[in-house]
Length: 120
Image (cartoon, rainbow, N blue to C red; front, side):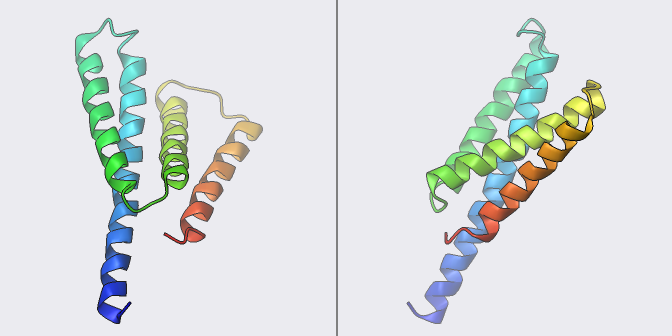
């Protein structure tokens, strides 16, 4: 592969990672709206849930075009789990004991590791 081909492949791959992060952010949105929807009894948070869910899955599918399925899914769920935990701590007053924070930090380290050591 020539230099131009490698550059194009690199840019496409970097864009895929950006799309995957966007998908993870919208996952945080749909889980947060799920909580606010009160089992889908409140219409606006319920609508927010479905909109964020559709956007999240759309960007996830775009990211998976060049990032391997297992890596993409692990990063997407990791971003969603970490972000949702942070929302839970700040908005819903979830507990912040040391083990919980330690494993959330470990989750971020794992996501970074998947990005750094991914060959795609």
